[in-house]
Image (cartoon, rainbow, N blue to C red):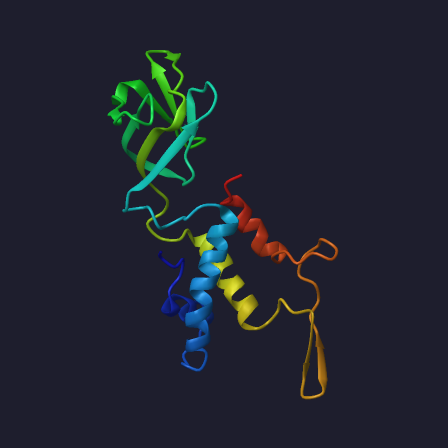
Length: 193
């Protein structure tokens, strides 16, 4: 899927003109992009213009389904079926409501809730979600995280030519291997809990 930043964007932001680190950066950018997407539980930019299709197994009575991508930009279709042997039928736009604050689809009739049919794959939602480009604050965190790995700041102690380099821990949590605090704060704002 799409990287959160390009090589050219990273080099411009860091003021790098030399192609010296291009091969290493070309490897780090997709890895860090995927790391951020995995940590956030959200693809962020992958489904902005491409449909995301999610199928839900409904095991108990409920009137809502929680979509995994956010923010939801548009609902293409909502479908339901009463059993796995039936075909999906389209739910009318007047029978569901998108709760944009939670990225959930609520099944409604007028002003009251209805329960989705129970069963395996009983609800299917096709939608678009995410950002056209990586938001500026997240972009900055991605740049910092790439630099963090590029400069091996994640390693607390290194030995180079007989000299020892001690990196100060970058997180306030004792014995933590988490992201540096300033990066984690930004990533947590985009994390789906």
